[in-house]
View (spheres, rainbow, N blue to C red):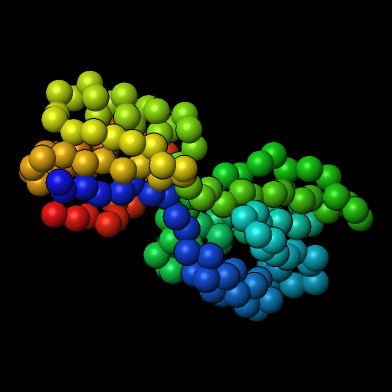
Length: 161
């Protein structure tokens, strides 16, 4: 029986490469000269430290640009609210979305069941397996899920015939 998996994974090696490029540019740019701006990654989160709101917004834009250059979808970033840090600086934590949470998985399963396609969808941890009798129905399911306008980037992998 043909099947495929719907997953949401972010390549952390590419994230590290994007951050390295961003650090280089911050070190070379004139408007960041003599500033305490930095960005670090710990596990599944990024921590940005900036001198003021303007520099924080510039760093956010740089982050999105470098993610796009490394072919990492910037939609995987979950920006938290900026907070005050030591020495009149601003800190912002950015979570990197990994995996499909339960609510999103239920939303996708409900949409697939409501589409009248003859398929089965099963939630397996942080991914979703969709199986059906015909390949064409599976491809229709992929188009349906893409049309849902989900904010989190999804990948369709492990397509088996």
